[in-house]
Amino acid sequence: MRILYLRNQAGEKLYLSYKDSILISSLSGLGFSKTLTYVKFDNTYSLVKQENPLGNITMSLIFLEGYQGYSQFLDYLSRSSSLRLYYKSVDTRYCEVEISEISKEQLVSRTIQSEIKLDKLSLWQKDVTAEIKVIQNTNAKTYPHTYPYIYSETYKGKIRITNNGSESASMRIEIVGAIDNPEVIILKDEEEISKMKMYVKSDDCTLIVDSKETDQIMTLETNGSTESIYQYQDFTCDNFLFINPGTFDIEFKSGVSSNTTCKITFTFRYLSN
Image (cartoon, rainbow, N blue to C red; front, top):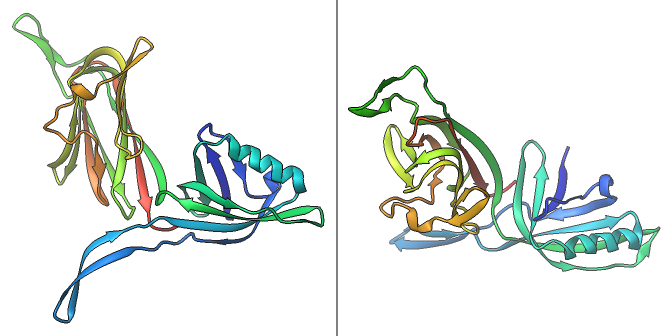
């Protein structure tokens, strides 16, 4: 069963179905188009550049509650500074949208039919979250005095993730707990591809590094206070991390032997739905 709904920045959902008394009578624009640039060599062409231009989705909406339903729809839009259109069939994906056009038709059989146009500001996307937990090893050997630290594998953890999208996926890294110069490393066949490293130490904090192009941040929250830590990054590393399509290992090094969790949200991107 196909389900479409809008979701704004506050998490409010508006279903385009009987649930919210708004039906879709026609829909187009769920596919994709590309702008391709080629170089010609005699009778052969080679692709040198491809872009995904701004697209749009058009749909006809029937407001079953007439003017009241139409008015409630406009109220929803007025309090929405950003919108996502979710499409659920076999999978659930969303794209960032902006409603650029809406028409108001006459009341017919107590319903109003309107044509709306949504500008697609992104590809279709899906968020997948994974956790890497570094758990304290109480059985590890300790060497006080001469070697005041623990020899164990509790400093790091690893997961494997597959990006089955068509484009690189952004990563939102959220580390909770104790840290000492933490690192997140992307590996392919045991070879380091990319890395994030922050020169930050804390016994209890929430560190966030989000690589999404429209939301790039590096923050540290301790004792209810949040600050930017952009200046504490290792500038020899990529830090804002992405993974290309394919399978990769993600390794997390907390730098401490305490219990620490690294939650990573991958935003996979698809050309169509």
